[in-house]
Amino acid sequence: MAAIIRQTRLFVLGTAHMEFLVKTTRPETLKTATLVVTIGEGRKLGDVAKAVDTTSGGALSSVLKRGDISGKLGQTLLLHSLPGLKAERVLLVGSGKGDLSDRQLRKLVAGVQGVLKGLGGSDALLALGELKVKGRDAYGKTRLIIETLADGNYLFEQFKSKKADPRALKKITLAVDKTELADAERGLLHARAIATGVAFTKDLGNLPPNLCHPSFLAEEAKALGKAHKNLKVEILDEKKLRELGAGAFLAVAQGSEQPPRMIVMHYQGGRKDDKPFALVGKGITFDTGGISIKPAAGMDEMKYDMCGAASVFGTLKAVLELQLPINLVCLLACAENMPSGRATRPGDIVTTMSGQTVEILNTDAEGRLVLCDTLTYAERFKPQAVIDIATLTGACIVALGSNVSGLMGNNDTLIRQILKAGESADDRAWQLPLHDEYQEQLDSPFADIANIGGPKAGTITAGCFLSRFAKAFHWAHLDIAGTAWISGGKDKGGTGRPVPLLTQYLLDRAKA
Image (tube, rainbow, N blue to C red; front, side, top):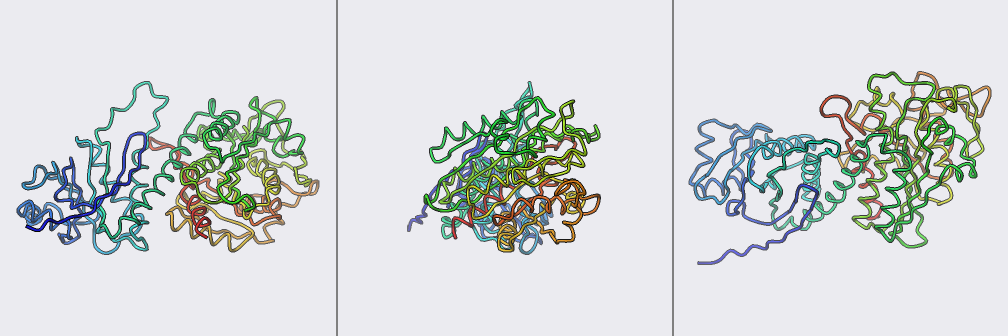
């Protein structure tokens, strides 16, 4: 009898609670606690399902004839102890008809994971290779599946006295065809790095503000620098910021007992003379609004006002794991915005590091004040391009909701690169205009510029403000106020966005 020899290679992604693998195998022959198989709408069996059906003596056909599952997208049916199979259970999942969108794939995978979490058994084998996803090859599909699984496995329970019960499921294997193995391995490698960065970003965002303040973030940066030889870390304290003339940055922090910090992390992965890319993150570790104080309801969520900085941290973690052959400078503008007898008042005028003066009409428009000085500081690195990331305006949520980040900039090529990266990573952005007419809303009778532009087009005028400090380089601004965290209820928490977008942008630059 001729033996069928199949190449079997493993590629492993480890997380705190879960191990992910890609493997070439015949799913119907593998021993596993749960085998996941897709069924097309109209009770259609693909090649894997047919092999399982044959091995089990027609068990799947019998189930389909009874009408227990039709194959509509997301339907699930759990079968136990099918004859002829080494799998203890078979989970059928409906894959619908035709090619799936990214969102449909994510919902299907999340649904499968939800069922698996409720089962016994320490492992599962997902035979999802036959799924067709619009615009996705084996690399893109694998990456999206693994990122979705890793995201669904995330837990933040550091401050709970009673932890969740340990999960039985410890390992998920993704079965792939051997012709697609190399692409799937690469997808897993990138998914691993992105998942690590997303989880780190979520952790930082979810931390309480009494612990996660500017000095804490500075210590996190130092720890990262000690762990990686090609990462240099510099912390600019209050004294250094004053010497640099960072009057806008210091104005935000002066009402707080927590001292401000500008964190500079320089990753050297490329040649010494390669110009770096720069990421600038808003790190307001808590935002009361200052003297222009916010309403009390929901103010606890203002701990997430540092998610721009957190996403830069997360992206850097991904870059460090992948050791991308680029140079990258990460600058985090970290401060706490509090009301006190020393706090900045509406009507105050400050001088920025660039020499431009700003009339502060609203102390709750503080993010742009720390960012403007940090953008000026970025000039010294002569960057190829600068992207700032900030939970900047509630107006962005009004304009775009919570699905897409707002995008503005001064260079069309850079904007296109970011939009493309967002599509590739399923972490999308949408461009808003920066026309000169909007700049006029920032006119001040007393200073060079006002820090707000009135009630109209608040997201755009915030971008206009920042653009005045970014004329020395190609620059883009991502407003992530709607995408950085989920608001209210039991699902409240950081999302880790836009780490996938930013990592994809840097992956693309590394390829180029």
